[in-house]
Image (cartoon, rainbow, N blue to C red; front, side, top):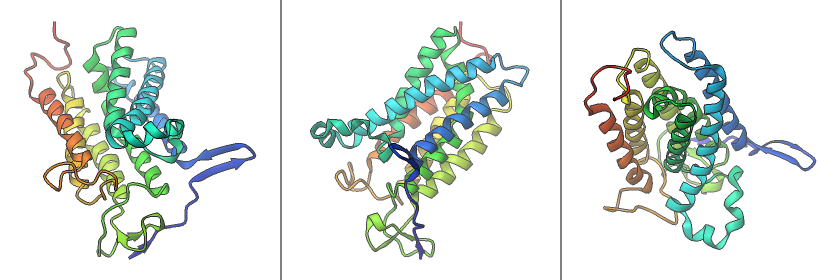
Length: 264
């Protein structure tokens, strides 16, 4: 059994200035995505400029934060935030939804593609390999915040989270960091190294994320106010992952004439 390390969720505190580790992780996510994007622009077959990469990071940052927060409010706890609307802005304390963030990022990519006259799926395929390190950082932020802990377990690596009580639990945040961060990154990065038909890279990203998230949910404690939402075992995270997987399969299986050529 492991004991949770005593980590202060506040990274920097100088007078009225308070910077939380959760916010730092988001900053790491966007910077790492931008740097990976710059690396991808060095490929001869990628028609992107460095300024466009950072513009995309800006669009994605807005979409991820706004969509992630609103997704959490709508999908996981609408009643609470209806009674406490001021806390809608307290993003540093956690409470972000990947699935809501995915919707926000999709809208941001659509707006970016229109502004720069790019194909939506082309932008999505460029973005997909850049996302996993950010997901890893976000899960580490969850770990530091002592949120989204796992189910009670007697495994040797089970961890006691003080905020969750005295029982040892799966460190499910770290499971997700490893799967959604490391494994997903390697899978999508290697797959995207060769030319693929439009939508294939982002399709694989969606399917792989949905499968990994669905699996980890078996080790993650469901939200106390929600519990399971179907069949006495399906969690909200698993339910929301199903349409993500379906969208990914559609992108992978749809007929394409030639790699990297947008439809006429």
